[in-house]
Length: 302
Ligand SMILES: Cc1cc2nc3c(=O)[nH]c(=O)nc-3n(C[C@H](O)[C@H](O)[C@H](O)COP(=O)(O)OP(=O)(O)OC[C@H]3O[C@@H](n4cnc5c(N)ncnc54)[C@H](O)[C@@H]3O)c2cc1C
Image (cartoon, rainbow, N blue to C red; front, side, top):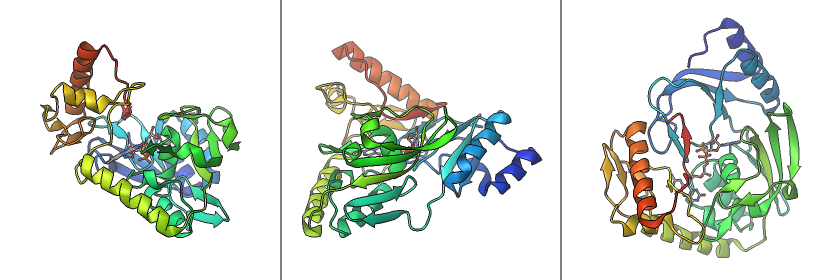
């Protein structure tokens, strides 16, 4: 989608929103798949209510991008624009055990920044790409921990009320790869309350998690992490592996040889290829185990 109406272009400039025409989402996502559209880069949280009013009044559909590490985006000319927060400087401010973090902050850098100031708890998240906002949306977690545990409050734009609100941690439910945020809520900033731990101890935890990741995941290849959520009490990766599906391909979309729940773009995979592979694996798992696997990866018009 291309924004060319001079009224909208002028409105964006007034709101300090940068308009980048014809952005390739293949370049903004870890899977390296996706067509093109206009990207709107938001410099100030305060612009968001007016920005969304402007887009809605002019019938411009939109989606919200974090770091693009959990997305499978459709091919070709995309029928919506993409919004993304620009990181303020600084994007993390510490106050005792509290870390005030902008949603656009890189998750890994947040973990290491807090670690250097003797604040731990998030060691398991090292190696999870993307932003803090994206991690909040899906309650990212690994190795027995999840980000939701540490959330004290979240600054969120609530589309239904058309305003920015502060939600306290107890007002939000965080479950396995699921939160109670509305689908059109936008996380803008979070305050995390983290346990004090000596840097050396946190570093050791980070080292262990890094090692586990290195030995089990296809790092350095284009993926979106796990394609499917684990069904209650089971492992999607183990089921796919037991069916001998590692290495299964559709075009350049491939079930990874190391981690069967990671599907990689081994070259020039299209969204169509990846979707066909996902559907094929889902069907085979359903046939063999009677389990309907649910996507962990988010599909955008794919
Ligand atoms: C190699 C690799 C390893 C991974 N390992 C893990 C893991 O161990 N555990 C895990 O949980 N995940 C893992 N992931 C998946 C992914 O990194 C996480 O889900 C991450 O938190 C997504 O953040 P993002 O900013 O990239 O979100 P995006 O991919 O940009 O967006 C994902 C969804 O969140 C929404 N979103 C993003 N930011 C916001 C915001 N500020 N407000 C509202 N909605 C927003 C988007 O609209 C979209 O619906 C892995 C991915 C890769 C590539």
